[in-house]
Amino acid sequence: MDARVATQRGAASVAVAVISYNTRDILRDCLRTVVANAPARIVVADNGSTDGSIDMVRGEFPDALLLVDERNPGYGAAANSAVAACDTPYVLLLNSDTLLPAGSLAPLASYMDEHPRVAMAGPRLRHGDGSLHRSAYAFPSTTFLIVEQSPLRAAARWIPAMRHRYFIDWAHDEARAVPWVYGAALMLRRTAFEEVGGYDPSFYMYYEEVDLAYRLARAGWETHYAPVAEVTHLGGASTSRVWATMKERNFRSLIRFAATHMSATEATRLAATLRALVAAKAAIASAHQLLVRDPARRRAAREDAAFWRHLARVPFVREAALLRAGRSTDLGASSRAARL
Image (cartoon, rainbow, N blue to C red):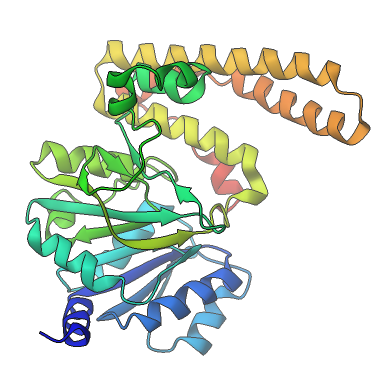
């Protein structure tokens, strides 16, 4: 079969869904690259942008299906709406701060065709400067948390079992089954996605793809890292303006994951470990600010120390217990207030 025809046939089995919030200019760049790939359908799920993104999509990309939810229900809920609007076998889910090179859809579709038990596949990701973007991770655990959030990661790279289990210094040069892949670009098998109910919307932001991969695995599906295509991830467009708020959201989403999928003992242990690690970071940051002499750097160090002290007061253990008990706890008020 002619390569051009194969590419067209592959793209015809894929819809592309882009999730956006207040990222107008880079959303435009993203959609231009998506259009160049000629997918069967383009869906933009916008969480109530106020920066002109909605008018831009309507005016410049009239063939895209635009879904707007002014309530800003979160990433997972927006993705669920976008996938529900597609009828293709596969849906490539993209953050708005990604760029999709020409010819990317056919190899991803072929990979899914050749691996019928794969429900979700992540392409190779590159940062904006072309460097490799880490994509594959182990499922959360207390050990995972310590490795990821402490200096022990440097020591773990010298232990083969730890290096393999936690993908430390992995070259990302081969396709393989992995626990979960970074959610900036995800090729989804629509039937599998629907079988497990899609994203859990209670994960307002962060860990929604981890939770999805975990539930897919329990249902007998696989998640793969599949470097048959590359996607550029510019990174943090919606969140870089409020880094501290999003860091807190990330940790609290981790607690939600632990409370949802771990035993009471495991969830409590992870939450207590997170609290200890955050307290240690707060102590180090507070000491560091006293050593900085440059006024501008000292101001930044003071703000950093204040953030970690604030985070050290978050009752992670209590939140894990409340979530496991099925009681409501407002884990998202600060993020929702920021309309992110």
